[in-house]
Length: 462
Image (cartoon, rainbow, N blue to C red; front, side, top):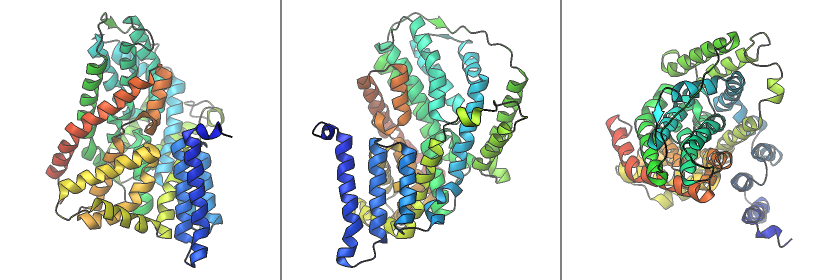
């Protein structure tokens, strides 16, 4: 028993469950409506389990949604509203598309096609992997699958340069895949789980959602392009090593008929995603349509047993749970209650856009550290309307500032893809912590002021 409580995660869960139990009984002792308190108990429990990973994320999500119904916090339509959100179905579509791409080998062909054409030194390897990680994000939803595709290629290149796995040079190359797959892709709507969750939460709580093109225009110039450059530069300076220049050698086989059909389907899907501002169809439904086509038995682009054996549906339930939190909080009044405390803490003043922008970034960062990047929108999105009223900033600007703050991940545990890069790439934890902390610190110092100025220029504060 003593050994059990030496684990910090267990201690956190025990404290959270104790506090949740108190919230369940306290309103009856003082004779007030228990709904808000019970919603708080559910939220506290979910945050504890999601942040410590003591239960699988999808199991915690199911406990949350079921608990909301059993405790009469929300009707079933509200408690399970995450399943009606486009964000959930965008994740589902992304899982199916990712499975088809991996099964066809199209992902590795893309990597080989880029890397075999260029002669690379250490800086070139870092740059090429950062660029390739972002390029793959355009067509392949899911950060972790992209890391799993690129990491073996990166490690093979590191070995040919004379770096053993776990060495300084190899760690830098491996982290280029992790950082390049995670940070710049925040500017692409379907390519990053926290972004999909955030947009889905906005849709669930407020009934609005930025288009693919609008999201790209808001985030790509600074937090996509420049963040990729800054992150790559920091990586090079941290891990710079002398090695022989190498050329990636690969002779890909010609695409078969099913591979060509898949390539065409991806091109059409990407075309609809990037032109959603013209046709008005949500990226979620475009992605779902592509998934349905892939799942048709006669499409020949995905094996018939893939739906059962090659697709992990845990993320679908996890995202549905996170997206349901916003509706549960709004229905119980917990969002307004929490927002009141946040307003007291931040003390926003209308007209002080720069200070308010920085405060909201800080809120997003703290939420990301507390709930991890995918879970943070469950807390921040429901507070946005009250923050918009208090700061005088447009609601969309507050929501996008929260997202920017959530992307400023200082430590690897808050970004699941970083943990995958550490494990698969054999990276020393100390090197991974140093990488995440310094790349994010550089982004805070250099890029957040530029993001503010850029948003001013495009009228985000008007």
